[in-house]
Length: 323
Image: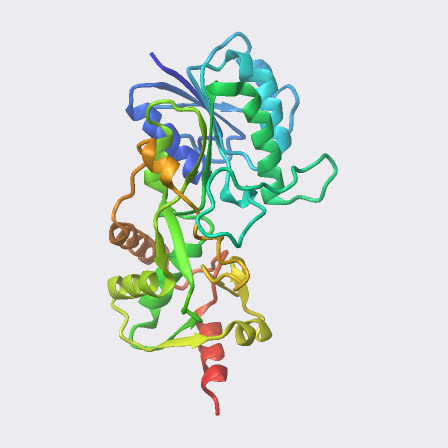
């Protein structure tokens, strides 16, 4: 029987990966702190990766597949050192945030990366992923490094893509505030497509895992149609939004998917290596329907990690439209 170790296995993406391997008939162990349950049919091994002895409980075991999604370079390096010689294959989920160039259109895997994080540096997500990649590449052709872009789907803890489904659904016939749309694009990958890919036949190398480029206006139009929104779209320019303390991309009081004008390449990455390796994309409208259903179930007006509350949105709209 195929032996799989998922470092994590209880989170949004890693849990899906564990379930895919389980469904393929593998024996799956999830190494995690145990704050959340592991998927049914897998084994949860409790351990904190801040503990330098955490891997001692795995002594003498070998693995057909090890999967790691960590954003801590020290965690990744320690895992490679402890388990690398006993893993037939290693999959690391990195990020397209490793690239230093956010301007070039269609950047592929040869793009220049950020400088890797060093011990003692202030935490930087992209730099941590770069340093983690550097640890994983020491495994040679036993390693696959996948660089997803914006991952979307039901249960997304970042709330970025789901914000728009909720914003259109809660507004009904009322207006919705959107950023300036001309020239803006969006590029996403469904979490289930990514999980399917990561639990398929083993590969090696490095590849961007991301969907096709869509004009942001088109993507929001499709979300709006699915939500049944019939109100007005009110565009606000970058300077106006910044002056009113609305943030780019993510976080509190933000407009998700909105990026600074000087980052035109951030959501225009090349995905040809992923496609050539068998990566697939479900229809965007299917993803939108799933996300919309999930947002309605979780509560359109709930507190979010990204976006603007409806009250704040209405207040901003009032300011935007005031003479």
